[in-house]
Image 1 (cartoon, rainbow, N blue to C red):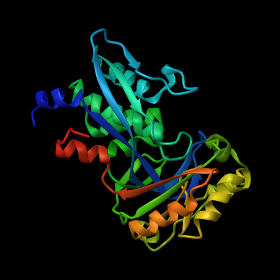
Image 2: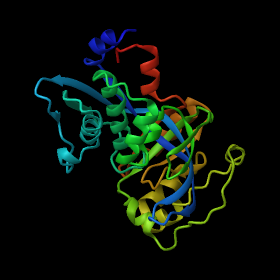
Image 3: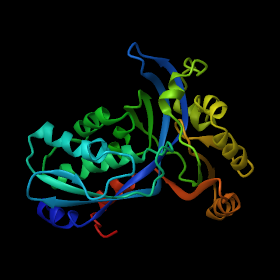
Image 4: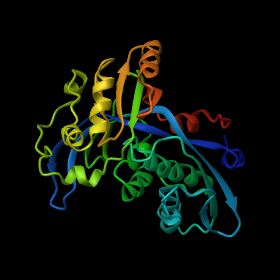
Length: 294
């Protein structure tokens, strides 16, 4: 497909910004600047926000609809677009329309994924020609989770989450619970009793079943709704926290088993999502196939 054909189709398209899960999370140290050194496994699920980019003539970057309690200038899609313009000297403008489906503050990476989709798609729409590696570096300035969404494939991650190696865990069905609370990530990483010296492991250790999340104990101590959700979900399968939460998840070998668990867990205390784990990001898949009808 030519660049002109891409541009004609892509401006009218809805582009996916998928959720991620941390299939495990170990804190293996801390840098002098306070950032924690991690080992984690990122996998995407087919639950997505959807973003449409509308060209404008005045060079401005704006949102069609702002999110509650998020000033437009702070929205990560706006920051991503403005970062691209600043980096390249691009004078084009865009109005960004976000269909928000991912819960905010849940540890699914919704804001980071939105930012990555803005970086990747606008890089093409504006014909900037930046490499994936450059886009990942720009993304890191917006948030530690942004690079993996630009990378576009499930990954073993180290450092602060920016050192990525492709990995292919099983693409299982997933039930995700979002309790009715928001976990303060800064609070969790500042907790005195947070484990910060876990032993580093290898990919083979993760595959063999080492799925611990070093944040889970601290989160459960401070957020009873998260602990309650983990207990309820563990009746059906191994229940885990993604990132610092608040979302918890469990994997299932069949859609039927996952569906039955999700139906049993629905109540007024939390949101329940049924999804499929995927190793290639839905955004990456869409770009590769050239099928721009969603």
